[in-house]
Image 1 (cartoon, helix red, strand yellow):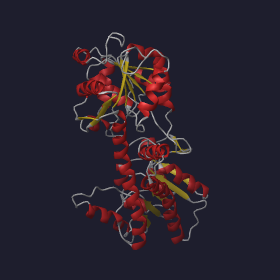
Image 2 (cartoon, helix red, strand yellow):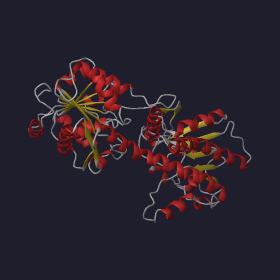
Image 3 (spheres, one colour):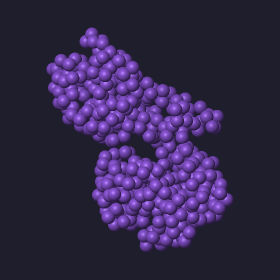
Image 4 (cartoon, helix red, strand yellow):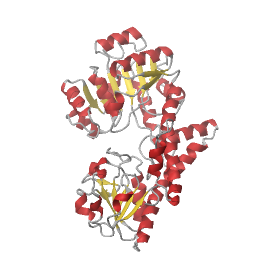
Length: 457
């Protein structure tokens, strides 16, 4: 059944096409979130095609190789839907979209060098949809966007060819993705989703589609802009609270107070939600989401002082990591220039192979500017090159050659490292920015230790 045959604004027709597994789905953007989304629709029996400009990714998928090894549970689903020919991928949006009833947009919304949100991928897709979208199709945007982007931009771009008129022969809505990289299958099957359409009828249709695919609560919102406002509010809440504890940790260091002990005790209060300090906040969500709201504030002539301050604090934490390291070098009367420093972890978050806006990049550049020779160990990137540095294959082989180790990402693998291993270093200096080393555990070894926010020990 093609988009020209099925009216996606007819609730009963959509219900029948779901039950008969004839509703054709196209997911534009099959990266970290888009691929699991496409696999979820295909797993429910709906014929699904993924579109991506990444030719290598498309070739990998069509050759039956699963590209997201750090997403538990999806490889088996991938193998099943590929075997049953319910899912395939292409680089040609002009071939996939006209034959689809439902088009999901799961495209990146990064920032430019001035921290202005970049919606070029969505705008480009919308422009293409204007040319190739079949009448009576439904477009759902899962990308994280500013409130009003659907109403103010997407609708007009898709309508620009004159073929399509909103609410008359094409329909649009949102279901902001709500998943944590590395835990997407769990989140897709447990966390509530927000849904909204261009009108109430479209919202109802989106609800029955997502109910068919995802076994989670679907929260109907009054309009697209409200749904997107909720998504940004939840993520920016985290960015602000991480900034709060990070700023406190800088003061607690000077007071000789262990921030981790403060937080572990504080979380016993019923209304305290714990967030941890660290070397910075990276990834494709939190930093960008804050700047999305700040961009909206500029457009509307409002001021979001707390969000702005929070961003500045989080962006200073990589510098503080370098300061802690420099202080440790001073304690042992050694110059950081020409020293050998090992960065443990370059991913922006634990247990995920993803370096988007990782604080590790800033930390590495800062050390290099100080004249240090920087090395990297991250089991997710073994033997590959990251930030211009060849990632070490084996930690034990390199430790004895190092003057300092800086834990930037709290991978589970790092929690298993014996403290005595760090004593093998030349100097040895150990900096922990993620609270995975218990300060007392280093006392029996000749290790110069600094823990971010850990105070005296």
